[in-house]
Image 1 (tube, rainbow, N blue to C red):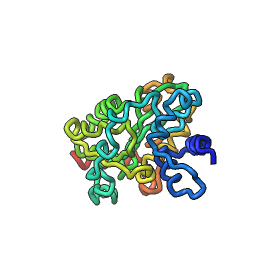
Image 2 (image 1 turned 135 degrees about the vertical axis):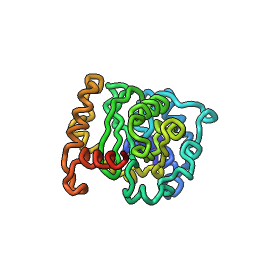
Image 3 (image 1 turned 90 degrees about the vertical axis):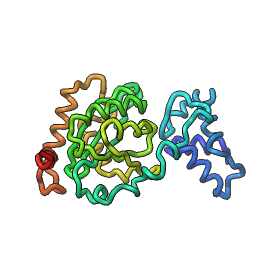
Length: 251
């Protein structure tokens, strides 16, 4: 086995350095062992950058901070914020105001711009907004500005995956009174409502969409179309109808 080619091949198929290193530990035909940190170092080395290996990392970035300067994922997303600790009423969609959030990423030529997607779990009401930077500080600030006009009980919590862009979650509770919950590592399917929303939104926002050309009016038009579509899970009501009904109950 050519270790370097094996690692590069796995990266290109979407495996993370941790997954590659872990698999090699139990692979009987592997003559060598390697830690995930060594793989990261190679990816960000001159040779790795010349091969553009960084583009295959799940959470890619141009440069990597020194190991001692990085915050461990366990500290970013502590166990008490696990999706398994969400209140039962959130899991069962009984209560209004529980959301799921994600980012829709586009082709590299469009730079760091992306579209944030939010969906309210009970009513399936969708919110999309253009986000100019994947940094957590920028994203969380924009998210709070978008959500703040809603009554507090209409924005009780948001469930995210463990992407770095969501690491600023601690600002949500003091900022707008919203709790944050997180999926297990490598388990985005646990926030299935927003994953479903992303698939629907991709009809209007394919990966080659020139995001810079989309105005706020364009984004609203896409949201309005999604929210005006009857849903079987809502008894063929639209998300707008269901969301409006829940807001009336809060008055």
